[in-house]
Image (cartoon, rainbow, N blue to C red):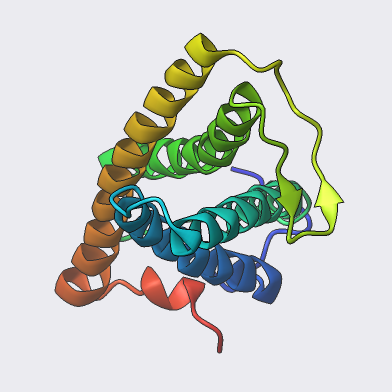
Length: 183
């Protein structure tokens, strides 16, 4: 197997990849928690403020994930250690690409939901994002449902991802987590 010339040789992710990973993790876990909480709030100023921040950070996650994918193309991840089983060598990239797909789909469906509701997202109150579709109540319900179910899929996949890291690093002690930690 040949490696990309920019691929790390020490089995670790680059500092940029590590930083983008943990920034994404922090934002996504926070957004999922806030998202689950905010839908139950009564209509109030607090709810409007929380929804605004949720949208802003969702668009931020979208931008970070796009940066991560561009960085990954420039600097591919390190090879898996030899302790990783053959089935895990198949499952790991499937899980990672599924996470990327969900991390892209979640903010896009949120943006589409706002567009279909006739609401323009103004990122951090500074940049008005274009509406992706015309106002349409039927589309709004489709995108709302998609956003809901994608969030559940993301929660499930994150639980599996975290479980796999615990299995590797706590039970097997094969250094998988240390590859994604700063030195």
